[in-house]
Length: 472
Ligand SMILES: [Zn+2]
Image (cartoon, rainbow, N blue to C red; front, side, top):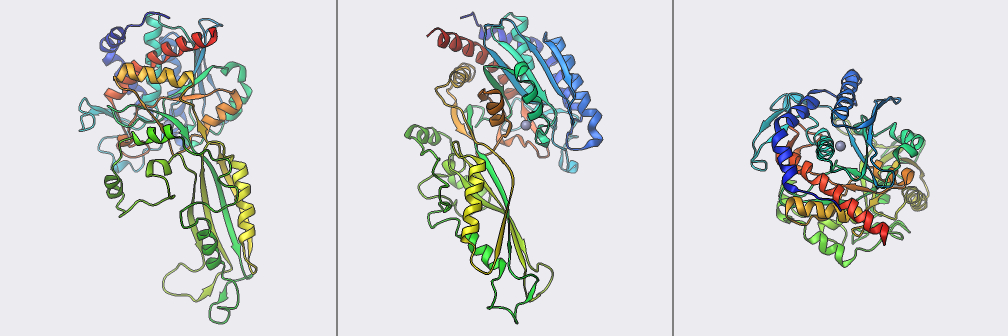
């Protein structure tokens, strides 16, 4: 145990507020758009900015590591080989700012403005929340801990520059640097929380199987009068096959699809019911007259705890102006399946492919092409990292965080588990309304500074729990 004083960190933030904001602004001014090669030097400049900042805050072994794409910045502070090690992951690259004309202020010229949700003001800039602002909280939390001699855990930082383009070179890097990156837990702030007065921890992510299907009938497009009724129409058949993939209760009909899916526990359902939710607002926001989905589950269960199957695109035949009476030779669809923990992407893709081939009637040929996939992820709420995070939020926000699963996927998180064997804890401080990836992205000043307050608490509680766990 070590002494920890909440007042002290608030004082640190108070005394350094302007300087910290200026530093973040300098980082936000760098146009580190990873997707566009004309910004290659800017991306590098952001890496150099981080390198300098790591040096200023007292990190060691600071490196800019070149990859086949954009560089990774590494830094650490090892205080004691027998203490727990926390690896902080984040990214310094950003999404393109387009369409620029929809921004109220230039995207790389940060400005603070007040809003209803952010009465204290929010920083408007590309990357303010995703992920420069959230990642930078960790550097400033470290700076505080270093300066006030509060470091009890070893800390490693791995900040990449290719997250927004699929982390293409990260897998190779972590595979080749397992020892360097070895850790007890990975800490990531690249997600959100429910509201400023309702903190939450993301405890799960869905996996993904993605396939493209092709149904082929006759060897060429045919006259729908001369041949209509006598041959299988690939578009009709594909539509029929797709509609058969869900039953009347909106359950997916692929044999074995649910075999590995864990039923929700009572306590999980209770946790979901704590998330503030208005069905009316949800419906009116996207202009639908009713939600829709698997029988027996509510919306916030359907969109995170349950697997799904959706057609993402479908095409074939004549789609030009007017009418063309034709039976197309081919029909296509792209289909995604969001998976939940225990379902394996490769296995689900195979189950889909077998089933899709099996239900194809005579008269057509079927081809299934797998695209990318990824595994689901879950953190147990009885793990020490979850409990440490829960305590940290409780102390910093004054209320217990809600455990919330996300319906989306962050492929690097299961990848870390596979390669490094370590769990990640997702402590996000952004809000859904922060418009990440969209024009007018922002990050609340409250959220930014609350993050800097909460992170050292996480280290404290993690250390305490780790030690007592070890001594048991
Ligand atoms: Zn991000």
